[in-house]
Length: 79
Image 1 (spheres, rainbow, N blue to C red):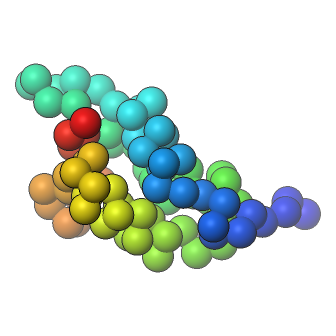
Image 2 (spheres, rainbow, N blue to C red; image 1 turned 90 degrees about the horizontal axis):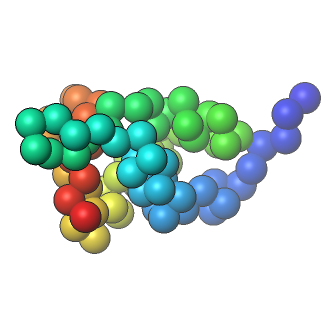
């Protein structure tokens, strides 16, 4: 059985690094279409949706990413 990590072990910084590593340039903007849920599950997070929401809001407040459509998986990288 795989061990599960504590939620606190996946930070906004970790998620931002994942987003940047999986970004692609489209029409002059950098965006990430990779599944954040799959990444968090691979990190062993048991409830990835709640953590994804919290971390994306944190990154948005910091001005690092923007989700233009709340139902979309696309994240625009601002810095």
